[in-house]
Image 1 (cartoon, rainbow over the protein chains, first blue to last red):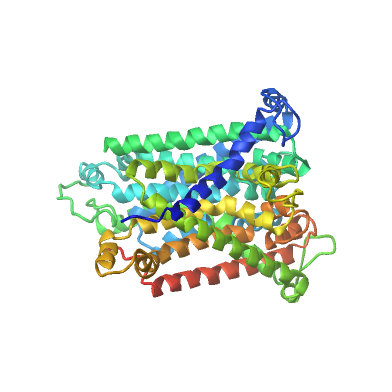
Image 2 (image 1 turned 30 degrees about the vertical axis):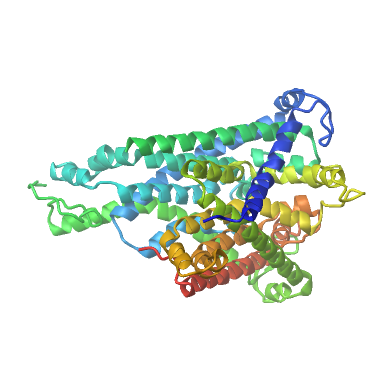
Length: 257
Length: 310
């Protein structure tokens, strides 16, 4: 069946639309001139200036601290919740409740948390962002681990119980190792989401301790500086590497099955 | 605890552990397991999700204090302010912008998803990754890219003048067109993915049957393909519409300083005007609108017969 070629126009248009802005940022980050609109020659000076920018460095450190904290919290809570939901109860209501943070508009959650923190008189800081990020991180970890649980073979757990292992031993020696790939994938997801998250962090951060997205936001508001291009190029390189590596890893695990 | 051998029963997975302790002990161990596994996560969600949202909800009926904060005196004025044209027009305008973005995303996304679904297997994966890659890069960086592209001496004006389409650079930045562009750029992948999944699931034999019965390709598309992929399109529309409606970064950075969408309005109530009760009321209105939308989507999916998956 021959397709009219016309349909290829929006197809290619989509890719041009998605990649032209990114390409412009990357090209301009190696620009020797100061203008973000005119390319004057190759230079790495903006990367040098960026490395000397203390605010950006501190923002990156804060972001990583928050992401690690939120990931640990999300992974522990999300994994326990997933096992509990799959093995010890069968409630549709609970399923919906577990997914709620993932579908909740982020602005609504952000202002809710802001009101909550002020109501309990909690000072804002990195800890308040960690607590906020774990709300949705946990939901994603639980969802990923549950899909793994759904495909898991339960006969090993039963055998372990029949051989006299306590529930705790069964969980630690059988269930956890079986779930490990799912837990790792969920943790990676929680980590990446936390690193890029802006709205919750913006509302629950202390003014003196901004995360990297908040730093970028104020840089963009303040005006156009080629340092942002250099930062964009670095972040793009990191996300592209992570996404492609994750893709390779899933392909690898699929081929091993 | 005595242990006896027992044949493992299939389907024991969902129930309590199938050991051999007496009934009371088994009930106790199930309760203990629920407490250990479900307790921490549910407690966390109740304290940091349900309680904050309940607080937000309760703020809608209170008055703001003179210097911000909240006075616990009930009032209905937050809701009367909601329908004040000053604010209500912004709410309507946000819905207009979000609908426009969603429609453009559908018009671009449908043919794109269609072509991807028909690609050979190897290219399909690459095309899909290329769709989600920009989505995994920092959101603010992507918005910043459009600030540069749309500004007076930016690339879009350069291309347009280069082709001789315009003589003078256009004012492309700080207006609603720029906001729609930014929203479209941020959320287009969310439209394409569910559409791709729906088109991919189409049963080729139905298309063949349609062709064998003498339908032209265009007729097949309107009578077979489109109705069967409509649920996927609806999902995509919801995925795009929801984040558009609450966004405040794009309207600010690409739309200029004025509050032009309800997201900015809510943000300003909390961080500038210090009127938390009214900000909560606006957010409640947005959530109500989204809930209506989700019910409409569920209803429309049912009318269309939903996914024909066995």
